[in-house]
Image 1 (tube, rainbow, N blue to C red):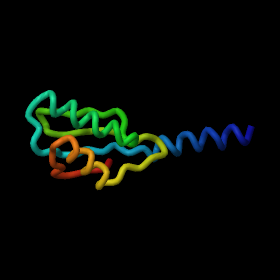
Image 2 (cartoon, helix red, strand yellow):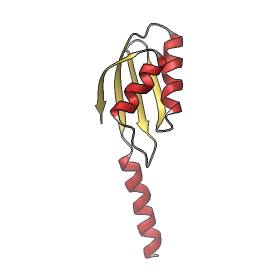
Image 3 (spheres, helix red, strand yellow):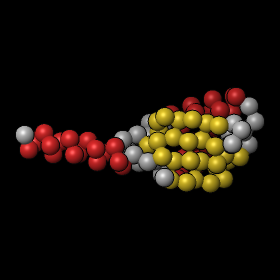
Image 4 (tube, rainbow, N blue to C red):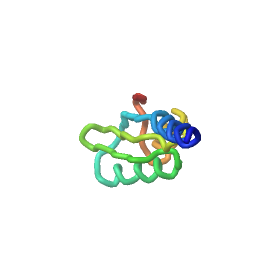
Amino acid sequence: MKIAVILLGLCFSFAALAKKIEVDVKGMSCGMCVSAITKELTATEKAEQIKVNLDDKKAIFSEVKGKTISDSEIKSAIKKAGYEVVGIKRK
């Protein structure tokens, strides 16, 4: 029983470690931009629940549980898609 409680606690701990990240992106102007950014963030295998908002010029996503995506990895993915990161906020 104690082991089950410990394992359950660890599962909740990993969930708490997953962070929401909001990235301000410069240069987006169409649906293809949204697709390109989504594709490159997905390719890092460290981002999930990716939502790219063309109107707000933001990419919002969560880190995959147990993985950390660095600012440089985010900037690299956005640059590979053809855009520029203006700011990164972690919540």
